[in-house]
Length: 114
Image (cartoon, rainbow, N blue to C red; front, side):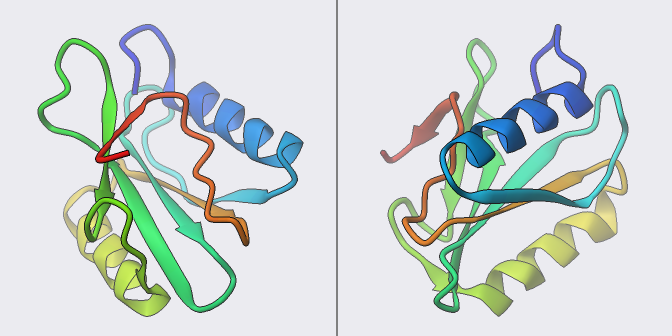
């Protein structure tokens, strides 16, 4: 995620922020401990979810893209299908799931479209 920060540490910090904010976060899939990319699924616990993926255009400062579209929520099974497709071609990918009724992602990086 960050050139100086191992992925496992970034994931741990994200889950801690979610926990301190009153949400529940967990690792749904582990990737490469040091350099694996990470995606974040946010489930609102009403059958709707969104996916946050590292923007390929964020060279200078890391940012995330909101899928399906900024500010939109999709059926949770659609998001799960997206995650499975990404994991099929990137086994080093980490998948973090945050369950939060308010739909907060707890990312400190910029989220495009917010």
